[in-house]
Image 1 (tube, helix red, strand yellow):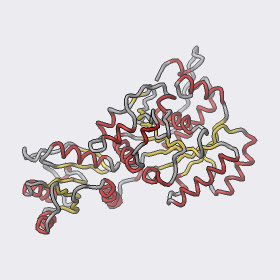
Image 2 (cartoon, helix red, strand yellow):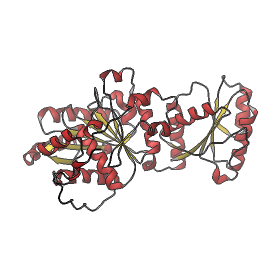
Image 3 (spheres, helix red, strand yellow):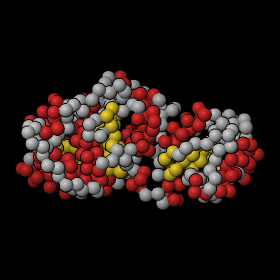
Image 4 (spheres, one colour):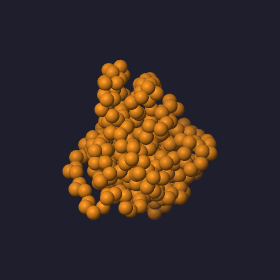
Length: 391
């Protein structure tokens, strides 16, 4: 990720600017500097990739700081923000002489800042794997088991990779991820959206519930009215904050994947589409794939998962693969009893219930991360495996 610093004479403004940068999902914050105390980097290596400088009534101090950074490291991308007014031609000239590359006027659109940072990512050759951490799970239609798949993929990601995983529940009208993991959450995604003016990684972490597997969960709506005035663009900013502080971000999108969700879908490194082998499920999935392609989503990012699979389904699936020119990523065997028991007890699937189904989720996680781990030995004397403890 790009490293970023924020410079402002106002501590509150500095925190808000830092939050906005984190909401782009492309930067990693570093310790900030106090202009009044004369703080600042002393060597070229200490200068971050990007510095956001707020220019208020005091023009001289911020621009002198920007000039010092430029002398230390001419490669730094300094972005100036005028805190009070449209910049005059004279101010623009002063900023350019101080090494400022971009000048923004309030109110600043976070998406414009993201576009600027994306250009810089390409210029510096930052690997995409560092900036694209999002795995979206969507259902071809309701009732195909999207949330069960989301929950178990997130758990297996945490266990196979040993890295930080957050599960965000955007299922509509109500979210069930926390329920399936037996978690009581004080906050939901609505609290994150309502705090966008100051939402950074620290505040975001305070909204999460922790599961014993290591997965952190941002709960979904407990009331359908929570969706009032919630736009996919604002939810994308929440996702970006998650990407700035977690190794993997799993989003349960339910069956919400219409074109209005483009701001979220375009952030995804991979989109897992869940369906069943029946006429309505495959019909809906085919139209969903067509929609994604029309939105410019690369087919290589799509992963098709067949839930509740039976071996006789393969003939129909082979014909479906040929028609859509896309292969099935994984087939999850049908085991209604094991899945129903896990849902009712508020636990992820675990060894001792259906090893084959658990191994399928492990396989998905390993293919998503490229990390392969040996299968754990089942615990003896525990009929329900990991069911015994609450999340």
